[in-house]
Image (cartoon, rainbow, N blue to C red; front, side):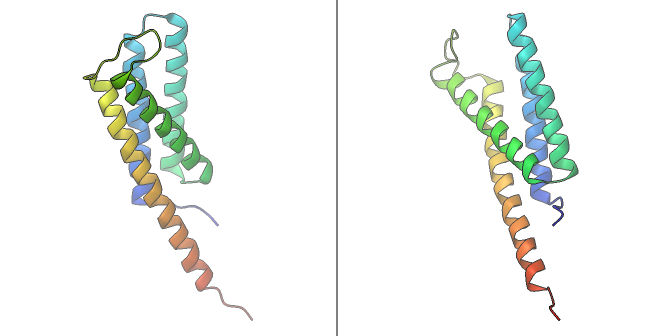
Length: 131
């Protein structure tokens, strides 16, 4: 079975690409060089997952996008509530707020894409003819 792009997978790819841009924006605000390079590396991985998801909605691409959305949701909520380690909480951090919204949109789009892929597989099985 070849996975195909759906409208939901494109939305999930856009949400993942937004996460990559937000990670780059966050890396500008970091003062520690080692942490900056780690966040930039994560942004590059996130951008490659967005491209993979947009190109072909495979299980691996959807799983990686799901993990990235979970990371973004948890870290965004931590920034706004108790703060990340060695940082005070910032309840009005716009990057964290957009990150949480993009992660929620990514979760919803990935679930819609999963349902569309399952529906397509069910229809394909129902159309099989046997001799």
